Image (cartoon, rainbow, N blue to C red; front, side, top):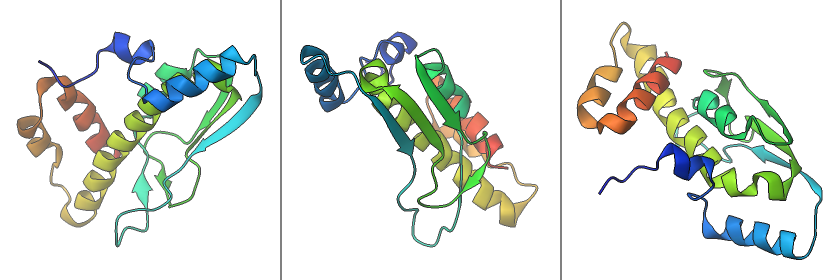
Length: 153
């Protein structure tokens, strides 16, 4: 068994946390269609970190880019601080709510890798931190981690 989600599972919203699915079901059943604005931000960073690097933007925008919503996002590789919005999405929640789990996961995982790579490179240039990623990860996620580590350089 593979412990990764397929593109079909992500694009269909099947990887959503159940409470997002229930929220959308309830809103649709009650006929509630309201415009909402959601902002994605890290409320805190690891101890001693004053900044982080945003990564996973290309995949996140691929996921929500075709939806009837307005999406704004910092660019890939941007430095951000705790509390600073890195992405916002505005539209009817029923149009994009089931993608919230995948959206957060794509940004969080990739940003964590990019941030660690940037911190390693700040004190260890010209070291290549992506070398150990290739050996430690399954083939299905290695490319994403290498890209994220490159974004952090």
